[in-house]
Length: 133
Image (cartoon, rainbow, N blue to C red; front, side, top):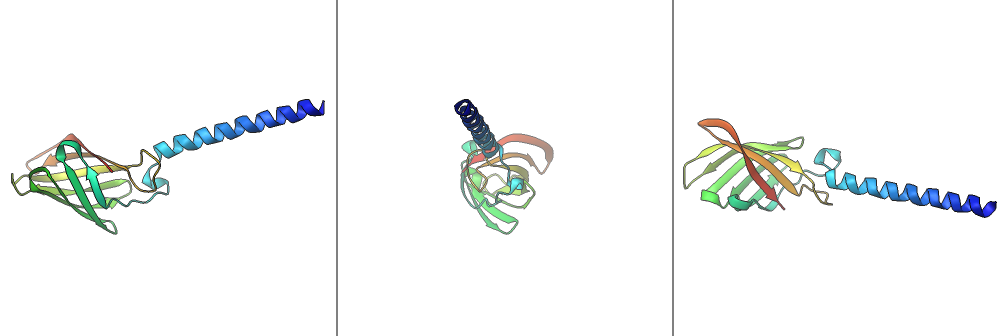
C-alpha cells in the first residue's frame, strides 16, 4: 500500500512539473515588454525589403537610419509601441510609423518590430515594415 501511494505521488508531481514547464515555455514565446522585459531597441535590425535599420536609444527617445532611399527616423517608446516620423533623402518622402515591440523568442529585449507606416500626404496606413534582431 505504501508503494502505491509513493508511486501515485511521484507521478502527480511529475505531471505537475511538466505542465508548469510547458506553461512557462508558452509565456516566453508570447512575452511582451510590458510583462517585465526591457524596451531596449538599440542596435541593428533586419527589415527585409526596407534593408538594415540601425537604432540608437536614449531613454524613451530613439533615432535611426535605414538602407532604403537614405532613410532616417526619430520617435519615442510608449508602452509596447515605438512611433514617430520617417523621411528619405533620396525620394524626399516622409511620413509616420508605428512599431509594436514584440519578444518572439527567449530574450530580455524586444526581438521583433512589427510595423506600419504612411506618407505625410496620405494618412492611409501601410503594413509590412517588420524587423527582426
